[in-house]
Image (tube, rainbow, N blue to C red; front, side, top):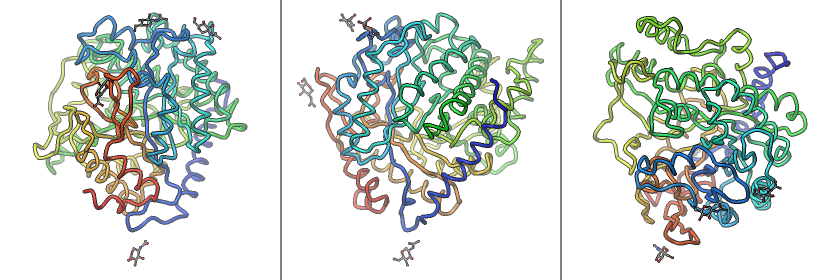
Amino acid sequence: MKSAPCTGTFVAALYFATLWNVVSSYSSGNGSFPYNFLFGAATASYQVEGGWNLSGKGENIWDVFTHTHPEWIADHSSGDIACDSYHNYKKDVKLLKKLQVQVYRFSISWARILPNGDLSLINHSGITYYKNLIAALREVHIEPMVTMYHWDLPQALEDKGGWLNTQMADYFKNYASLLFTLFGDQVKWWITFNEPTEVCTGYVSRDAAPGVVLPGVGDYKAAHTILQAHAKAYHVYDQKFRSKQKGRVSITLSSRWLEPISESSEDIEASERGMQFELGWFAHPIYSKSGDYPPLMRKIVDEHSRAEGLKYSRLPSFSGYWIKYIRGTADFFALNHYTTRLVTSGEEGEIPSKEHDTGVISKVDPSWPSSASKWLKVVPWGFRKLLKWVKSEYRNPPVFVTENGFSDHGELEDNDRIYYHKNYLAELLKAINEDGCKVIGYTVWSIMDNFEWERGYTEKFGVFHVNFSDPARSRQQKKSVEVLSKIFHLKKLDEADNFV
Ligand SMILES: *[C@@H]1O[C@H](CO)[C@@H](O)[C@H](O)[C@H]1NC(C)=O
Ligand SMILES: *[C@@H]1O[C@H](CO)[C@@H](O)[C@H](O)[C@H]1NC(C)=O
Ligand SMILES: *[C@@H]1O[C@H](CO)[C@@H](O)[C@H](O)[C@H]1NC(C)=O
Ligand SMILES: *[C@@H]1O[C@H](CO)[C@@H](O)[C@H](O)[C@H]1NC(C)=O
């Protein structure tokens, strides 16, 4: 916390500039991606690793959540074994090679390395697992992109209040610092948190661990701590590691595109308000020129809190120090995107809740193709609009799409998945070529079928099939691998024309 608060902004601006110069020096046209555009695939520790109690790993909140309340998971399953990537990581690297990706985005299980969450115990078996995985990737020239926190908080830290406890920012900083020390010579792409809005859902309802039900309060509080934790990790990198390791650090934010249901000014305002509550909540403090939460969000939650007779706003405040400390703490914009909604103004959700604060009713167009996931409708054009919104809202940062994907029931002839990726990639290309968005990478969720949180194994996102009845968890290629591997290798979308 001793650094000049503007360091982050300055360094980020530098990185923005250099990253984009490299990419834009090669024009893209005729369905081609920029010369050094990066293609990747992603997973998360709890969804694929298994080995939940092996080699001294501590319990995390998803272990406890699935074991104490199997009925909260669609098929009463857990990630105890999942894809058993703890034993199969070499097989996973082969799949990645087959898909012709340049980047593998995976996450580290905090409790596998720090069973108690803090530095009181460091388990070297956990460290060895990730060292081996990173070495296997490097051997075949795949860049690791490491997510530090993809939702599996050590239970020992949840017992201290989890993300509702502001001290968690320092526990996270220590953990991040250890990861930079251990892996930073080999890892050049770092993501602190995956989808913090989803992390906050764990403090709203029982849809996610830890299942603490405090809507409109717990989520805002958790977010506040997460933003501080992220910024601390970023500044540690700046102060102690960046000059030697020369990597990049960001935070993965997820967002739908919220399209106004009509051209009325009320619906356009509803869309803007929805975007600020959904993406701006975390993006505005980090990427905007002024920092802090979106002014609109500040105003609405303050007003609602007063109307509810509260002395303080349910949305916590940052001091001037913290606003500057958090602003600029990202070297690129890491974005997850899956789907779109049509929105109009109106009251939804209980009082209090973030949903109610947002004041937006969202709908789907019945003509939009479905997936196996209720929430996931196929709307390729929404992707382009979202990328454009990020460009205009945050001064055109380089964007790395860290997740995009489609769920079905595990079909090997996964034509709907091919349609999804082909069309979302076409919109991404339009965003680059016609809108001037600086998109530098695209990551498929996921390399293989895995444990889909509260949906268990009922929804499959993999481009490789996993046989979950087979003790060996054998993997099998789906048709989408044929198509995507061509696109990724040649960096040309037309290569997939025969398939769609
Ligand atoms: C696209 O293809 C056309 C026809 O082959 C060619 O004339 C044009 O120069 C190409 N554009 C780019 C940007 O490569
Ligand atoms: C790990 O958990 C499994 C059940 O998932 C159990 O059968 C096994 O004995 C446990 N192993 C250890 C080392 O505790
Ligand atoms: C990791 O934990 C396991 C189980 O508690 C223990 O056997 C092993 O010695 C630990 N490894 C190290 C090096 O700390
Ligand atoms: C999955 O594995 C089980 C057990 O090894 C095997 O009986 C079954 O045929 C496999 N299913 C498929 C679709 O390969």
